[in-house]
Amino acid sequence: MAISGEARTPEELETLLEDAFTVRDGTAVASLFEARGIVVPGGGLEEARGSEQIQRLATTMCDLDHSYFADPVRVLQVHNTALVLAERAINVLRRGDDGSWRYAICLLHWQKPTALGERDRSFGDRGRWLWEWDPCAEGRPL
Image (cartoon, rainbow, N blue to C red; front, side, top):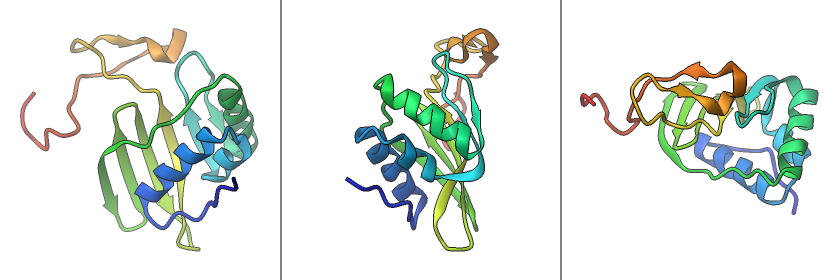
């Protein structure tokens, strides 16, 4: 199955990423990113910057049977930039001159901490502090 890198909407790009992981095609995964994009996969894997590193990381993730489920909870779009908030991902997308959307920043396997200020271990030894939030709250206090 060939994965087309021609996403006309941010939601379509999310679906293409899911499809590329489903068929275990690291090259197709990498084709959905900007040339100087970044992927932070979590789960102890190192981040990847640029096309070559992203392709290597995507191939490794496919070999490890990692998958991606397109489940955008919220999509915020301003002109040619979109922020996609999902249950286990935060992604920044940009629309290129050709009209196709591509990932610029992809934070995968992000997990919401169970308590305010809990350290997120999905980033390994470089764990970061994340604060509890509800992407669906739309301004309501937690």
